[in-house]
Figure 1 (cartoon, rainbow, N blue to C red):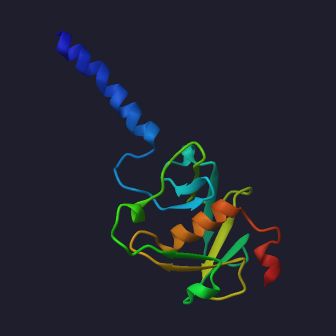
Figure 2 (cartoon, one colour):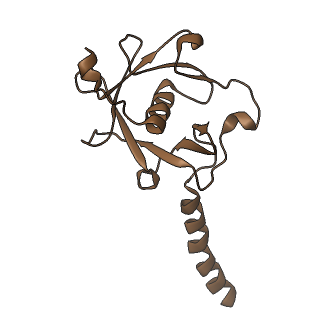
Amino acid sequence: MLRLKILASAVPLLVAAVLARGELLPGARPCIAIGEGSVQLTLLSWQAQSHVSFTSDPLLATVRVQLTDNAAVADFAVLDDVDSVEAHGCEVNAATRFVAISAKPSAPEPVIYLSPDGPADYRIFVSSKHFSARDAAALIVGANGAPRRMAAAAL
């Protein structure tokens, strides 16, 4: 009986530890290192300090991100096709900021229009096994915030 009570009290602690770590399934989430900290995507919206969303209508966007074929002209490039431990994520520490991708836009959060065409607030190049173009766009906008000028003004 005592073993059952110990087991019953340990299960909630294990669940709490998994949730506190921020992952229900193991595996590194896309992230970028910035100075002493990092910016990482999270699936848990309550854990995120910032949220971004995507739109297919450039008139609804507050940030325009252009996909480019040339890493030299990109503001942000992701090249992580190397299979190594370092290529699979950043170290999570107290300086880590989390970004979540919201399904529906809300007024204060950046709304990203991702397109291969310009003009753009940010240009990104992505060649990765671990990052999608949406992941890279969410990270760069989440790390830098929305630019001062609105994307609609650039049309």
